[in-house]
Image (tube, rainbow, N blue to C red; front, top):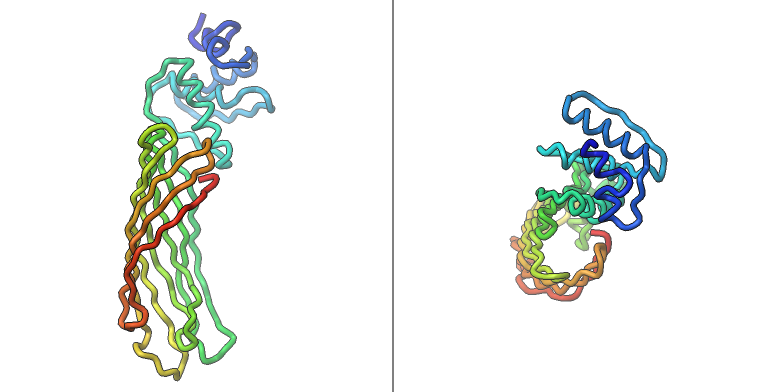
Length: 257
């Protein structure tokens, strides 16, 4: 009996360890094709209907073959299913001691041609960006990076908008059970645009905002986190009234992160 047959077959390791698992001939055939492609090289395009058990069919041979494997999904929902549910079950059934990591996020890059209707306002032409990435290592450590660049409106009639460029990095570490701690830091640059002919304190002012902080969180399942956060923010500006330094703190609820 081949190793795959012993795993997927009736009374096999998956049936003994995974509740509700049952032998499917198509699933075993799918897994055999994936394993042969990994071992021999080449390209495999495979399709199977709902209920075939496709995730187990490619996770099992991927773990058996060893080496580094990247699994890319079409949705974050499937990605979370693989990482939080299917992969732990397969690892337990195979007794496989392997390191796994989860990388997900989104990034958008573009070009903005901002033309205000008011002729006294200058326009903006330039790149825009939005990045939100996270990397989970060994299910207990999460690294996060966010970055943005775009036009933002201000409350100053003579400097009515600015170009915001900024980035924030964070590390979350699971301490025990559902409890984690987070540390983070960020920098922002605010490039103001002056109304034509307006009297301003500093022409085309550029402010900077620095932030550092942390928090503690409690996870309700895989998708919901309740946290308490403390951050210190400092704004550096050539205008005295725009400078500040102080603490912000409060509770937060996040879902689906």
